[in-house]
Image 1 (cartoon, rainbow, N blue to C red):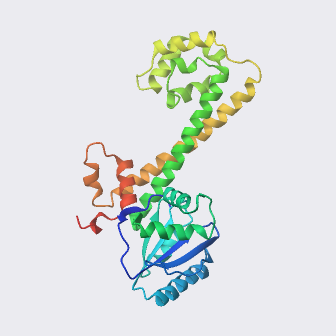
Image 2: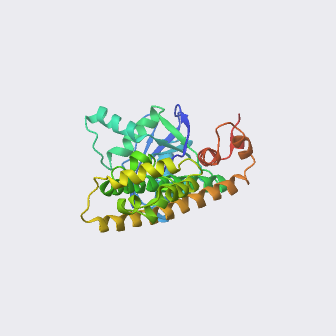
Length: 314
């Protein structure tokens, strides 16, 4: 589960049962042990209601056997597969912590000189890390804070998609017009997209009137670019060393990438609009937004990760 980090759990009190889980997509491996090292055999349970109830039953059995008054459930923070279990356990009489995957890898190397992953070994290693006080408490946001976390995660994914698409477009344009980027440095923006959608090839760009192209570039770039850049681009297009064979296939690919970019940017814009509206329903957001350098994205990400600020003592 990405980002549900809280404060570090410095030490585990005597009388606490440590129940750990090696999370899987369909099947999990559980393990119960006391602080002083008494333990039970590892066991399997599924990502179903029946499986979660089995996990709770094993916790109760171990708690009675080792006479533990408290229960701490721990897991390794990798991927989204722990989230259903964490939400299931949230209302139960247990505290939930997570450990850093790098810590489990290093401790496995220390214990048996092997970083290899095995279902039986991993939950035991997680328990050892918790005993060492290297776990973090888990923050599970609710309501609008939970919505902001999902929005922030979605935005990050789409921003990553946009970056990948921009890289693809840059590579495709380089094939037919390597000099393009020497005139317009940044491939992101309406100006580049306008030129590629309307003119695309160096031959068409080279045949343009510099005043006409310059005025179009000025409007699209809000005055950052103009007739000077248009003249340079036209001259570069007329002297380009770009390839001439198979260009039609590249142009088709460029059009497809631009269409994808527009869809992804529409998603990002919609997400940011939802963030703005959601922040308006959260009282503390106004104070965050008043901090210099804090915008909607930063405030939404912070509230999505921290949750309700009123739950903190200070």
